[in-house]
Amino acid sequence: MIKSSLYTTIGFAAISSIALAAGSSDDRKDLSSATAPLPPGTFTTSAHSDEWKVANALSAGPASITDLATVIDWPANPKDGMSHGRVLRQGTNGWTCMPDVPGRPQHDPMCVDETMMKWLDSTLAGKKPDIDRVGLSYMLMGEARQGQNATPAKDPSQVKEWFYPGPHIMIVLPDSAKDALRGINQDLSNSQPYTSLLSSADVATPIWVIPVAKGGDRIKEEPAK
Image 1 (tube, rainbow, N blue to C red):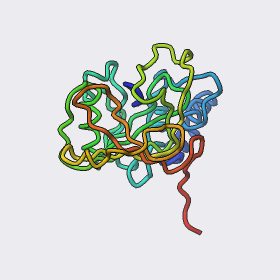
Image 2: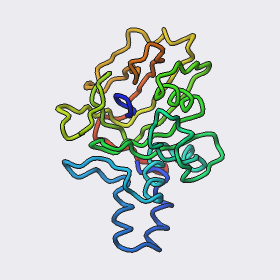
Image 3: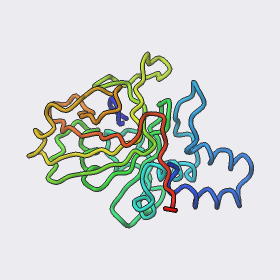
Image 4: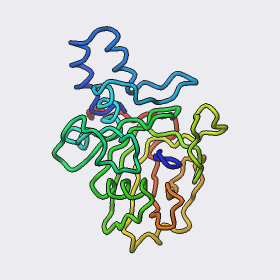
């Protein structure tokens, strides 16, 4: 995803139905690409409309979270903090969703609660997060990562190996409990839960990444029959 990794179409139907009714064919095609798999050899980009970014961001979590979540764009320099990100839609439930991180070979939007946002802000800036409670994040579109602690490539087309964790949730524990994650798998290739620092800083706090589907799979909310 930003740093080394930070770096379902859920909540998308309502937004897309409005766009399909009012937009041009080019607009509809662009909006549909917010959750469709990327064509081979292409990468995520920030060169999309605000409507596209909202649709993309909301696909990261379940509708029970995304319906009332705030949506913000990534700031030009994430080290400045997420408060510098432009608000694309104001929410009311304390959750925040962000669209794709540019330069990845697949969609990777994210929805975070207030504690995970605090962790994200501090981690991107290389600061100690000072977490005092459990935080949670959804990435139900999955993501693409270069590997544990890899230096982000300036040119994503030059990355020799990408890892593709499937749809997952991420949990950060309070600083006082982070030793509970010691010894957990750190292999990104086996579809098992793993831990990651997402930062090489000495003060980094690990997160626990828990896949809920294999890489390349999608999660879809459907009414019970």
